[in-house]
Image 1 (cartoon, rainbow, N blue to C red):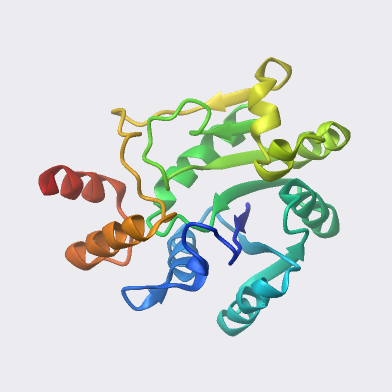
Image 2 (image 1 turned 90 degrees about the horizontal axis):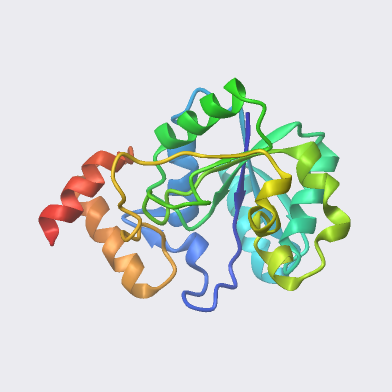
Length: 223
């Protein structure tokens, strides 16, 4: 299955975070590295914008031989829509580029559920029990593209699955859960504080293969 990583450079809280070094590797590179561990992911595409600020993301992808697609900056839904149509993608996994500790096992669990059931979306984000930065969404492209004319509000353009979650009765959505509710734990990078926290986790665990169970255990002991 194809995995699309949503990434941009113009983050207001932590500018240029996508290519910010995190223990020797950029945040975006760490996301890609974790996804490449999965045998169920057949292709990885970084979806960024046509803004000049994101030229560096395209250059990074070329250097690392990662596929890159560029679309609208603010209308993220349209960016995905154009990519899906141009590549004729049947289903896709959506991961955000600020998740350097994403555990590929969570994605594989979602893929298995998606294949077993006739779902429009399989996610762990509708009702959250996983930490932030471990969000996974597996989406049927036909269903995603079908609602194009209804994506009018700014919020829906920016948060591409929000329309579906706000109208969940109209769609077949499967939410899966972690064994415990650890949604209070933030493993995404949005601020300098987040960055330092994730840096500490990676440096202490000394493991480039993100393992959510080990990370949670470390965080509990750290507190």
